[in-house]
Amino acid sequence: MSIMFHDADRTSAIHTLAELTAFLKTDFTRPEMLTDQDYDCLSDIDRDVYDRARMLYASGGIVLATPHVQEASRLLTQAFAVNVGRNSGHVGLLLDGDSTVGKTETTKTLMRTVYSQYKRFFPDFENHNRIPIVYISVPASSTAKLLIKAFAEFFGLPVISRESMGDMRVRVVKALIAAGTQLIVVDELQNLVGRSVGLGESVDVLKNLHNEVPATFVYAGFQLADSTLLSGAKGQQLRGRFTILTMDRLNLSDPADRKTWAGLIAGFEKKLPLRHQELGTLKEHRDYLYMRTSGSIGSLAKLLTASAAELINNPARTVERLTEAVMDTVTLDIYAEENYAILKNGQTKGTKSAMHSMAELISA
Image 1 (cartoon, rainbow, N blue to C red):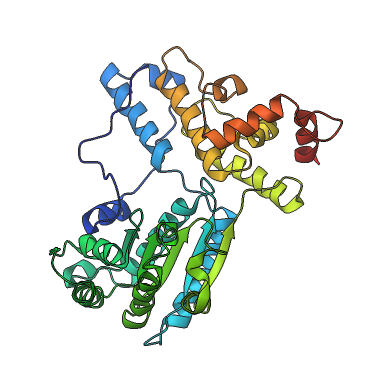
Image 2: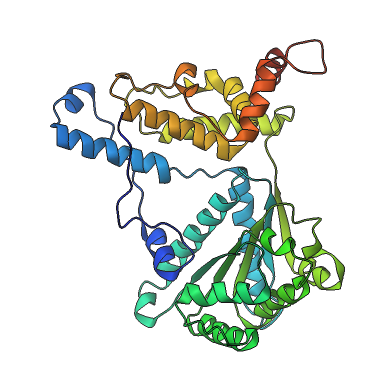
């Protein structure tokens, strides 16, 4: 089984203009699933190319319209409508949730949606130096100046160490207005929350951007709803402008979440580039999948993607079909693995084992 190395020109991040543009322009198309006869007729080189294409699609091309994505899209559309005629105090959307619930993937889907629609309305926007979307990842232990510096670096503006934060902000605002930016995504917002000193200044920077730039903002981070960022007089101003979408893990004791979980599994199965996977068979493992991932959509995506990679990339596996034995070869995040160990050991408060109780919940 060989290591999958990425291409030298692969986009490594999306927080510069060139990287984000490359990401938004990438068209992920699911490769055709070849029959065994056609697959065996491929030369070694062609087979490697075909398998690599499937791996790349499984790794970055599978996008599902999860309930979180659907609700975020609805709320963002509302925010755009409210902002369309405003010249200050623009409203926005705040995505709040634990790690692995899919916040960053949701923001990527939102950006792709906005980019697609903008390109349809303004097909020649690049000829006019328009930059419809800006993405910023807040640096760790960020200050107001580091935050505005991240905006400057996105545009490739020169950053002078002796320049004041105010002067840098003026240049950033001019760049955003000149670019006609429509959507500004600020990810990892919790990196502002951890600093009490200067936090008010950082909030002021964001608030001033809302007032000065005619764009719609999306913030994403974890533990934001009850954080210092949204408390006090300054935080109240953000609360008054942003709609908060809390992204929770799915709870299979809830009928709606059970239905959602089943739909996610079916959606992933339909898009996985496996030649022998029979549609509808993955639902037999929905209780196992929930226990492995603790109801995290992000962990589910990693489990199924890594399992697909095992089937495609391991020459010892001649049948590309997901089984629990295959999925057991994948190690997930620490949170998911610890919870799964507890369930396997039957450590519950009830009289029935955790495995049996969970299976009953899922099949209910």
